[in-house]
Image (tube, rainbow, N blue to C red):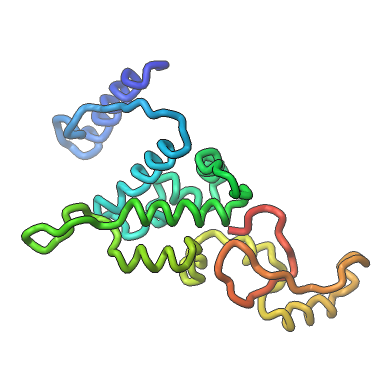
Length: 213
C-alpha cells in the first residue's frame, strides 16, 4: 500500500466489484488505466497543477463554477474545510500574501478563471477548449477574485451563526447600547465591518478572529 500504483489498482478493482454487484452489471468501470505524474514542488508548478485538477468539473460540464463542485479541493476550501484551505495556503507562498483566507481565495480564484478561460472556436462554433467565457473571466478579475454577496450566501458564513447582530452600523450600534452591560469596559462601539467578501456596508457585533467564510 506504500506504492500509489498498487493502491489505485486494488482500489479500482474492489470498487468496480462493489459497483457491479449493486447495479447488476459486468466489466470494467473505468475506461483507462491509472496514470501518475511526478510534479516539482515549486509554487508555480503546484499552483498550475492544483488549478488543472480543480477545473476538471468545469471542463466536463458538471458545474459552471469550480466552487460549486464539492469533490474538488477548491470547493472544499470555499465550504470552510480547514485541510483544503491549508493546502492552498501551502501552495500560495509568494511575497505579499498575508496568509488570511480572503486574500488566498481571491488570488486562487483569479488564477482559476485565467487558466480556465475557453480557447479557440471549432467549425461548429463551439469552443475547442471548454471553459469560462471571456466576459466571465473579466468579471472575476474586475471583482479582484472576491465572491459577490449572492455567491457568498451560498457558502458557510460564520457571521450568520456567530455574529450576534447583523445590519447597518447604526442598527448594530443600537443593539450594542441596549446590551452594553454584556460587553467589556474597553469596548467603545458595537459595529464591526463584516470581512471575507464584498458585504458592502453590512456590520456585525462580533469581530471574528477565525476565518468568517
